[in-house]
Length: 334
Image (cartoon, rainbow, N blue to C red):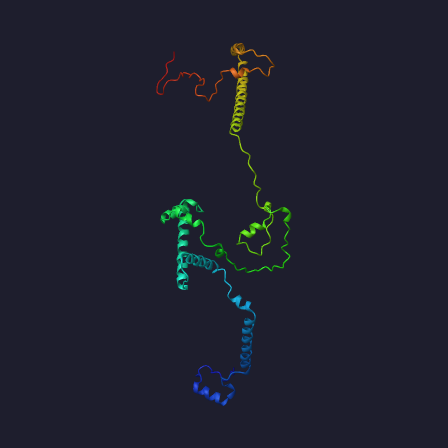
């Protein structure tokens, strides 16, 4: 920019007529409206590129297939539409317009969303995070759908050939790969071979390796022996007798400890000692004479009359009479 040509302070800017006259005098400053040669060359270069791209698409059919691959967003919606189409075909419809199919899909999505929201509301009202079968049954009764009416739908009337779906695999596995090396299981036999189970389940992708033997992920069924009721009752009676014997042993040990405590207390006072000795002699005289070792003889504690302090009819102390009178009275000195 020319500094001398710029307006100074206090001067006016040149008008458009003055600028046009200056441009006529200086033809180099005019605007060029004609396209440059480089722009024309770039446009000419773009045309053969598009032509080569079209030829590549025609020669390579996978190029157009890449543009039409389904995304994750509409994958579930297409599966729902396929279910609706199978139901319509089973009922008797032969064709359907795209608008009608979209309307049925939207109605189904709305119904399913409302159903799930109501079930979740029932679970939250009962202070549960996850709904239970009772919540589903209650919601079905709310919509006047008896559970008995759902039993015919357990068996799908649509043929199995139509139910098989070819899922799109974003990462296809080439069959000629050696990183999934199969182990021969012929020596295991047909009962333990897992290939038969894989063939029955059509939803398992073909790219997965062969199933291992069944004993690696399933338990071996065992035949339970028949139980004799009489033998079972005999075993239960023997267990009850053992439990009763154990309780008697515990009770006997408790009585022995109480008997020793009473004996120690009786030894402190001569009168109580004499009374305890008389009681012990009387108890020994009442015991039956049994032949055998001392271990076979019954202990005195088994025939004692010691009552636990927590029992209702325990021996209680005599209440002591107090010499103090009620409040506000003066006791006379005798």
